[in-house]
Length: 498
Ligand SMILES: *[C@@H]1O[C@H](CO)[C@@H](O)[C@H](O)[C@H]1NC(C)=O
Ligand SMILES: *[C@@H]1O[C@H](CO)[C@@H](O)[C@H](O)[C@H]1NC(C)=O
Image 1 (tube, rainbow, N blue to C red):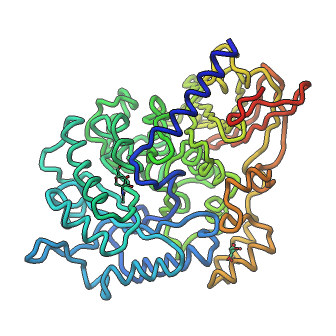
Image 2 (cartoon, protein in one colour; image 1 turned 30 degrees about the horizontal axis):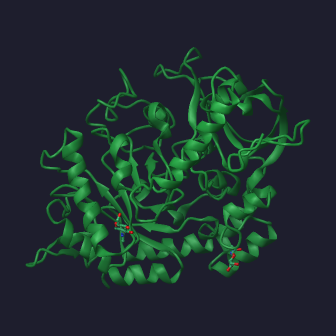
């Protein structure tokens, strides 16, 4: 039994090393950054982007890894006589290359947006049938990331091959420019993208647009009433809650891999529609599922509480873990108290991390506080059912990843006083906050940096379980670390030792 399991772990590691996704060498861990859409929609300008870039720096967000500053829809102004897309000079008076250069000056990266349609969703110029010219323009703007949407596809959708072809054309056009550009495919999870996105893109959206609600069902995010997880579901729409998106991805949560990630959409943290606990759950699950993490809040009005969620290095270390294996749902219970929409359920999500660690998340989306239990047998079902996995047969130490969240006072000081990277460094170093620019997550984990490992709170014995009280609409987020057993050895993914 053990032998079989070891062999399958090795084969899996082999597959991860040799099969390269889109093959542009990018997004080996999920991209981290900011996108204006969730908070600002079409209210974009050069000033907004430059102000945001300097805030990513002065709030210390760049130094925990948030690098991509992504401009969404509403930046174009038709095409010129040569068919080249024109930048709206009212919003971007010095042109896009100037914005790009100034973002790069901060050490940040720049992303833009278009649609695989004749128009973008806000009815700007789309790139369908203009892929080569537009990719050339994007390369001339020196972009590092392209979000490629799905509006106005002229009916060239409805089957995997038609949609694949539309997105592949841009993938090839980007590649031909010779500039490394993260390709963020956004076709809302239609046409089985979970089965082909990895071949051409660094990430692909799996649902309609998120909205700032934890669990409220909405008709516009269709496919929720009868079978939320059905890949046959068409017209995914918008107004998808955090819970709806999780239920949608659960059956194929494991499809992400280094170079190609499943995109659960930009973050709503800090927009105001959810409680602090709900935002913690949202952020932690997006990190554990290895979604790109693009901050959706307006950094000019960010609250200290939201900043102290977004900059939690212990959770970002889960997102940026080099093993790159998304957590999957190992248990779902719908037999719990419901709210007035009829919504109520609990989930347990778990997945392997580098060095033999494991992330474990208890999500309480029921309408009451609950005692939840996770059994090692379920947590390690991916490594072998019925506790056949070696991991099920050893003791674990439980670390709480929200145990040392930044104090609101420090977050407030950053928001009110910091104007530069030097200011941020002074405030953050005094608070002993993690700096991923000086100590990348991989090295910090190898050095067992306590700021990444979290706070030790409990232990689980071999073949045992962890029982914990979880408040209504919140998550408990843990890193499990193997406890050295009687043999003095512990299971390790890389060394394959037991
Ligand atoms: C283009 O594709 C080739 C083949 O997959 C790859 O080796 C190369 O790195 C890509 N270049 C860019 C700029 O993405
Ligand atoms: C993080 O480390 C880099 C490189 O050592 C340094 O330049 C920067 O000021 C530090 N930032 C913070 C916020 O401490």
